[in-house]
Image 1 (cartoon, rainbow, N blue to C red):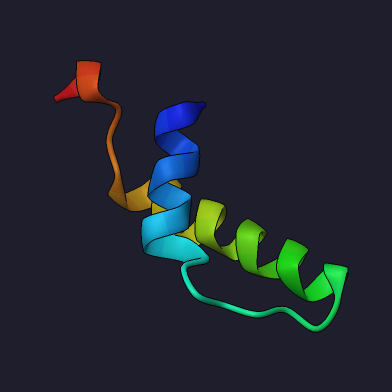
Image 2 (tube, helix red, strand yellow):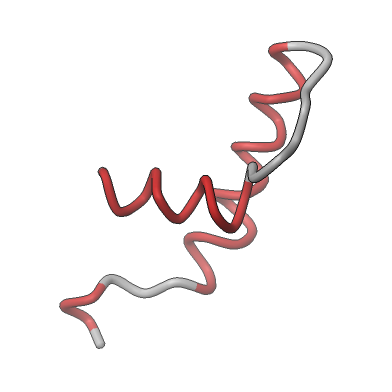
Length: 46
């Protein structure tokens, strides 16, 4: 989990200011579903 949150902070939500909680939730969901799961691989998978 620490690795995920580190990646999310540097690649996803870095320096963004959200007006609402829903806006933040949408951005985090988009990061996970569109970038993190499809682009990054688990270290043990190569």
